[in-house]
Figure (spheres, rainbow, N blue to C red):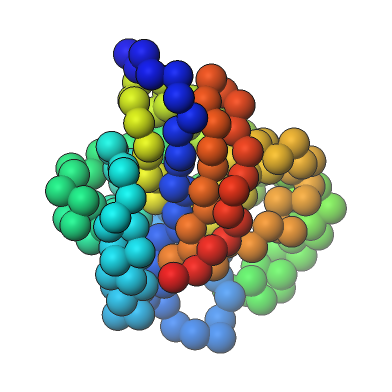
Length: 204
């Protein structure tokens, strides 16, 4: 258990760009899509950007795009990557992999209902943002509790936004007001469960 109460830094990253066709917005969720070539380059830029930082441990979700990004960064830090299923992106259930336009046409009522209650509406076979928040906060709290020193966590756009909303005290309804670009860096600072955001959506 950690005994050091000095302020610690948590580098919360989004994985690099994924290999998916451009100009077609899709519900990705937990589909295990790898990094694109550009995403790998972004991970290497992050590696150089973070190489000189005092980071004690590296965590990530167990999806390929997160693991690959974390592994590239961790290699320069000479740290082992610890992947956790609980850090996965929000599950989109039956809509995963399908274009937005197809869902809007095939499930018009459900599409509108989700738009009207983005936080609590649960797609069939999926989880709501409210449910995902409990999952990601539990994982984050556990990681912070069992570690000492500065941390690096490679997450996803949705889960990062939920965590940042919590730390900033923002209503979840505003989560899409927080940008999380591929390969971005957020920096949290604090201790004992109290954190502030020092950097938001920073890019290498």
